Image 1 (spheres, helix red, strand yellow):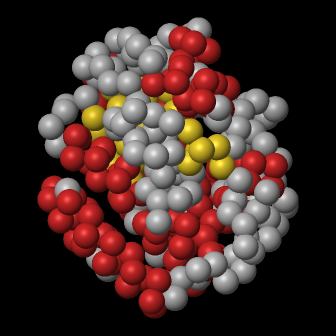
Image 2 (tube, helix red, strand yellow):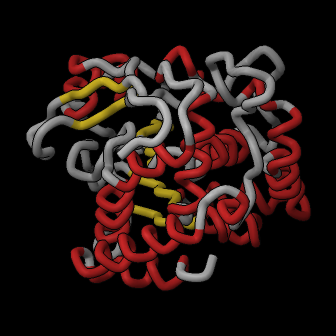
Length: 301
């Protein structure tokens, strides 16, 4: 039972045939835009960036932008969102009109996001403990979307664990994408923590996944472009220019790019909350046996 505010964050409660009941989504998303997104037909060359929210979406978008633009960052006054159509927000028809090759952003469940063997999908996962803390701070900082700026972390934790926050349950979305990534060679499944530990290695994985010309470009001239990508994709570089990475205003004391760290959940979650997530991860691995690999790697993070 909620201990603080007695209201939930504001969400759009929308329908899809693959979801029992309603799916909570960002309040700016409409049934029309979701229906349009789910009927989109991917084309060869389309690259989707998919994450559960607050698991590295903007970071991966920036990496791809840098890789495509010789390591040069988005210009001042411009925004990364202009190059990554958010398909469930703007709809499939608007996404269809974007220049090719298209980089497309989504947080949708595997069974909602349109699939094609001709498209490529990059999924980034993050420890759910860090995810829930980051998602809480994200939510209270966007009053215009959630009307919940006085919300409490303990309350948000309950919403997250019940799958009641926007885009539904982490414990359904992430394991389903992981499960499919083991069976489909057009899905690259990465971990946020691996990107922090060795970004160079993960960027080269992305280049290999996208095709030979991408890696050749990065490694040209003694890895000059790769060095620029790594420099401008660092958390410190992005935080210094963070107005280029979010499109809607937030209070100065609630920045969009906050910590970008591993294990900072320990500063905010209780021991009991940590154990509840451990139990939920174990239950999830029973439902999705392949997900045991992910559960184990996050057991002590």
